[in-house]
Amino acid sequence: AHLAASFQAALRTHFPESLVTDHGHLIERCTNDPKDRHVLACAIQGKAEVILTFNLREFPQAALAPWKIEAQHPQDYLLTLYGIDPVIVLHKLEAMARKRGVSLGDHLIDLGQFLPMFARRIWEDVNEAD
Image (cartoon, rainbow, N blue to C red; front, side):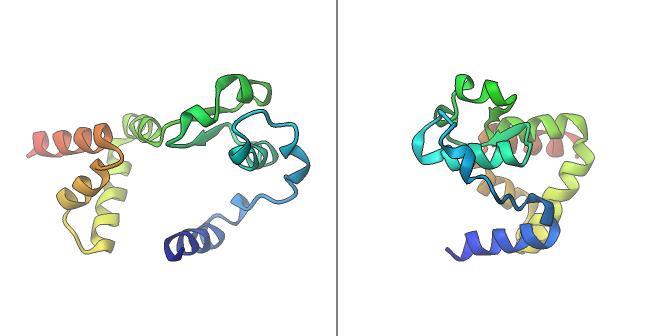
């Protein structure tokens, strides 16, 4: 609960435009997994192009297509961002590691639990540069 509250506070502070309201009327029009229809409704209301989720099966293409929204696994999205600008992604990862008081390697090990291909790619690129 503390982590979720901290994340929401950071979003409100740094990305106030990310707060979506007035989406309730869209929930009944969503056809994805019933327990995640509020997420799609928020994406529709917020004019999002992508929903990042570890639960891709709960957001089938058929349910998203009418809204021109796609679902992506966070790992795929991060790999795309890394492909676009590896320097910025690496700097952000290093800053996150410093904030946590751990090495980049330890941070990548932690990320590897949920994003193994992304963490491995960064690790290999960092070690190749040495």
